[in-house]
Image (cartoon, helix red, strand yellow):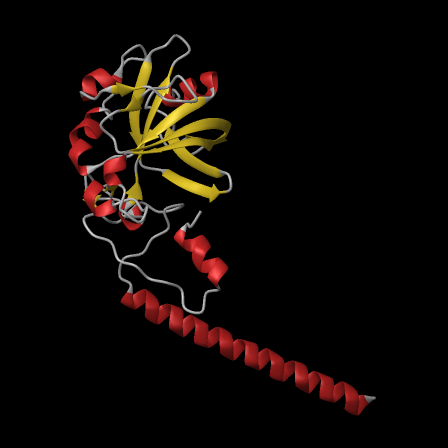
Amino acid sequence: MRCSSGAGAWGRDQGHQARAGRCGIHERIRSQQTRLEKMHYSPLTEKCPLEFSPFKSCTVPRPIGWISSLSKTGVANLAPYSQWQNLTFDPPMVMFSANQNIQGERKDTVRNIEETGWFVWNMATWDLREAVNKSAMYSPFEHDEFDSAGVTKMASVDCDVPRVAESPCHFECEYITTHRLPANSTVATIDVIFARVARIHIKDEVLTPDGKIDIPKIRPIGRMGYHDYAVINETFEMKIPAATEAEARGLEGRA
């Protein structure tokens, strides 16, 4: 028994030494990486050491949710949101987040969507960049941003919310729910809107003969960090190696 116990103790000692060795290696690697990565910080506990925060410039480019909505009294609203994304495809679902304003008030877009149950996503393009930017300006709740942005209203099919006629692609979106995320400041607190895409509109002139959207022709714009934007002028194709026929068809979006 003593021999067995001694062997066990020896084994435990060896295990401790091995773990200690691994920890030492990890610490050395971490120390080397820290020396190589001269700029790193914790945004949870430390002030950013750079003059400009890098966070928004790392998650790029971000698609723009150029959202039109309608108040319950019939006033149209139009505003761009750079935290916009699709979620799934059967049925198609989307989401976007809206920060509060500096007074701690919720955005007009959020209020409209919750009250009426609908909104429209309009594709933001290079040709529409100035209109997109103008629609980002603060306006009173009763103001119609279609007018200040200089764009034309176009009727939707399933809802009363107008579309931007000059935009090549639109989603009519049916509201599902709002998820509210409090943050460290009133402006950083967000409302995340989730919705189903009830109808998709694509202009004929931006479709290729084989039934795809001609992205280089449309030239969509995306949000970067700082005051910067990006424009998509060209695309490239990559197929996943060894994908099954069903996987390949799904990834390509074949109906």
